[in-house]
Image 1 (spheres, rainbow, N blue to C red):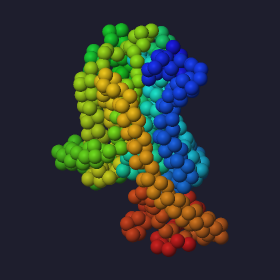
Image 2: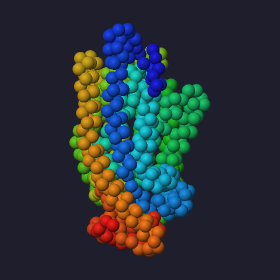
Image 3: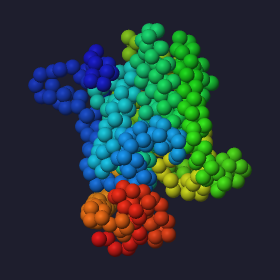
Image 4: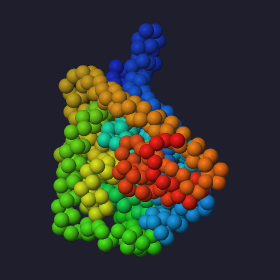
Amino acid sequence: MAVDASGVTVAREPGGLGAPGRRSGPRGAWASWWAAWPFALAALPLGLLALASWFGRHVRPSADEWCFLPVVRDHGISGLIGKFWYTDNGRLGNGLLVGLYAEFPVAGHQWFGLVSGVLMLVLLWALTAQVLRRTGQSVPRGIPLLVAAMVMAVFLFATPNTYKTFYWPAASVSHTVAPVLAGAAVLPLLRARGRRGRVAALVTVAVAGVFMGTLSEEASVVALVVLSGVVLFAHRLFRNGARRFARLWSLAGMAGVAAGTLLLVFSPGSRNRRERYGAESTSMLAPESLLGSLRGFAHILATVFSTWQYVGAVAAGVLLGLVARRRTTRPSVLLPWRPLPLLSLGAAAFLVSGYLCTVITYPVFGAKVVTTERTWNDYLLLYIVLLVTAGVFLGRRLRRYRPGVATATAAALCAATVLGLVAPLVSLGHDMQVRAERWDRQDRSLREGAARGAKELPYTPVSVARMLEPFSNNGRRVWPAQCVADYYGLEKVTYSRQLP
């Protein structure tokens, strides 16, 4: 037995799919190469993430961020948190995360993709490794990293709008980073040992729940649905010794989310928002809203189910199921996994949470919920985890039938998935570069004009990936033009078709 860098015990089985023992000569070299195949395969999705992070240098402020930047510049992060709490929407957690990157105006946007990408990858890697440990599974080195990297690849780049998922910081903190942070709250539970560990796990999930409630309404809905499922079906998932604490931990998380949500709902900013838009929006519980949400969610599912790149998540799960081996030194906290009941519960959680997320966003976006792809991510991560789990069960079945062929096929599907995501990403990177060059040119012109004492200057919309800009819709939609003026120290900016 050996312990790898991710903390997962590896069973060394000569001639098997685990890491073989050391041998001398050509056989030893071949065995060493074979043991490294998970790292070689993981290099593909990691390379995709690195490429995407490199393109991040072309990100520039847009949409809501025009309004965040002047506030943080003039009043700091606390000023933005106060603005969210008293005026905008009540999202304290959201204000904190937005303020952290807005503190470094353009540079914060450029580095956001790399920093958030590495953070999410590390958290998913740690979660994969700890789940394997707590379920009593041993795998070859590199498998947890491979699974986490493939989940990241399809989560960030299989979406119809990668820019709003990965590159737009204001959306990413609410709908991309948020569900990963919610999942990371499980880590203290998985590592809990003894009374102190359990107390720490309870405190962590409660605090994380409060923070999530003030960060993302959609991620909070998903968390509540999943935790409710654990409370209701713990007897089907956990062994006797773990059921009571699993329920207690879930209830603590639900209480935290409820407290954070109440804090948000009764904040001055949330009341102001309801007063601003309440008269124009439809109640989420109105029959027409519920039916519209159902139609919108059906359209979203059609788009998601027809996106072939999600097969990469299944393939990663198949590889995991093929190489994982049961350990006898540490019993699993889970009951023996039966595919149909577990996958049925997971599918129900995904469908229920996805529909509820659509219901709470429908009054704001209406029929456009089918094109606001960033709001899908809160429940799409659950969908991807479900696909990986289904792949694990399939891989366990395939062990009996030519496992070498199954391994090669699953690896090829992982590679094909990553390669299929490269071209759209490169195309987006080119569009981002074009926008960055135009944005920088206009930025210099506006700064120079403001330095000369100008009070009113023309502004030409410079958009990418359907992002909102001042004077969109051929100049008919003005927002957020005044925020642009504030950013440059002007009294007003006017619509122009011609870049300076």
